Length: 85
Length: 353
Image (tube, rainbow over all chains, first blue to last red; front, side, top):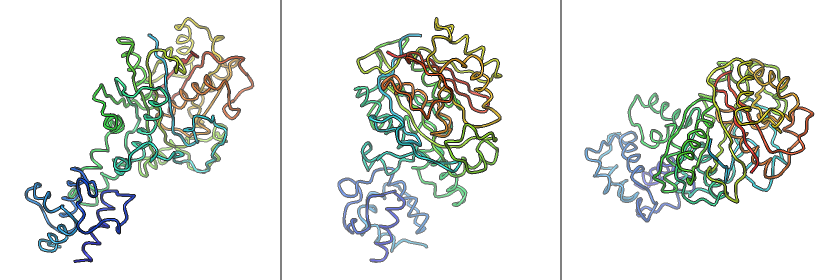
């Protein structure tokens, strides 16, 4: 799981162009939206595509993302349970 | 035309042109036919959170818009009008590459949102929270001038407005290379400073942005845009006649023009448009060129507006701009002429305030 969390942090930085953010600066339980990493609704759409493209997880209801993208830990947990690739 | 004053202007180009205290004193040399602009520190003008999704043209546009507004003292413009020849090519290319590589699936929104021609105008408006008139003109090499004409029309209806007008074009990996394949860009490396004497086909490609704030005369006014005209297609001799008519229409003669700023770009096939003027109606006028410093792109002519303003402001002409031996005593009337591939000609007259 620790490996997946690191992988997700790297993907987030690359996919969302977080140029000034280092992997070490993203805490496992930091909120990704709002006061934490400061992601916005466009980033949420990017993450939905990332889930499908890299892990074969297709969210039927985009609103599910709100809970799944709470933090790196929550994301990693969800991916490990539902991934198809 | 009604009064249309330039009350603030800023330009990003291949040369260091963003420091208001200097005027082409230190030049950067380029050897390749495709080169990028000289970047200022964008972080000084754009918040990191906003900048992370921005392509080059958006960064250049938002930064020069911010600088021009600051220069003019205007915080919120009454309209934002932009011109671009090719728009946000970088993100367009990335989006198309994603379509191909991912078999038309997994397309992300950011590149799509930012791949349109009016992205820069939109991003400037978003940054300012400006909900006013916002239009982008795509008219080849006359895109910037077309934007200026729209602003002039708006000011003729309501002179109290402050209008932010800009031109932006960027280099993108694939589409710029396509212009090399079709002969628009030179095939061989060239020392940029020798561009105007290259005597070969094609020009050199670069990128840049210029924004200015237009409005009524203020104590910050740099120049009056007396008139602007664009002509879609014409022969060299038709252009000569058009320029004479244009100057006459302003109640002036060619003897009243102190300097001409020309868009010669070293393309032996099309520079005859300029040379036909330089050897005839402009032969007794101080002639200035700039594309051997900044390269060419669809809105490169906007750099001519910046040059004219700097000349009025500093009363100096950097010798690197001069291409003939005539030196004007004063610079009150500066005429600009530009074309690309024999199309989208533009003529503009700027007058000292």
